Structures are given as C-alpha cells and as structure tokens.
Image (tube, rainbow, N blue to C red; front, top):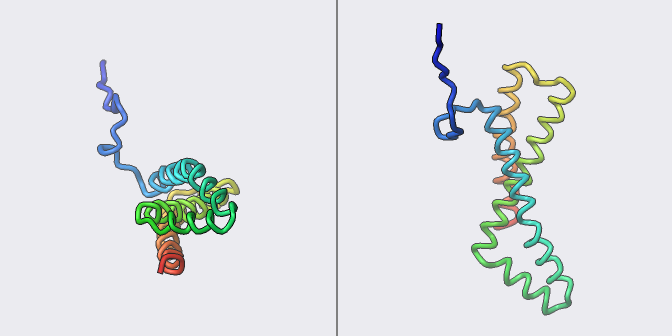
Length: 127
C-alpha cells in the first residue's frame, strides 16, 4: 500500500500559503535582518556627524538624498514591525495568544498597529 507524498520537494514561497501568523514571523526575521544590514550605514553617518560642523553638514546632505530617505523609511518600518512582533512573541512566551484564534487576532493587531504607527512616525519625521 504505497501512498504518494504530497509534501513539496523544494521551498517555493509563492506556492506556499502562509497564515497571517506565518507572515508576522517571516517579516519579523526580515526586519531583524534589515536592521542588522543597515548598521554600517548608521555607524558611518553617526561618525560623520560627530566630526565637526563640516561632517555634520555632510551627514545632513547625505540624509537628504532620496535613496537614503527610502532606506530610512525601510528601517523605520523594520524597527516598528520588529518591536511589535517581538512584543507579540513575548506574549506567546508567556502562553498568551497561543491558541489559533487569539494568535490570528494578535497577528492582525500587529499589522494594524504597525501601519498606524509607521504612517504616524513617517509623517512626523519626513514631513
């Protein structure tokens, strides 16, 4: 009695339908990676800004570039998402929101709060 194995042989993220809790977990990892990868740029800009008036002026000029502002928006999203998803995972560590329905509710709450806080911070910082 041979049964065919219907599990995928390769990881194709387009074909796999993750639940909303899986998206929160995946984006939590992506946001952590993004924050880690942007550290050299942040350290460079911080070092440049501490080198006197000319360095500070150069750092502010670099921060006015559209590409750098786009990177800053991405990092802002990463910080907000990582913080809120991290709080959700801390609740899960304390066995709060572990069952299926509360987990889905908390995942949607993370996305909702993330959108509100991100837009609010982006408007306050960039406008």
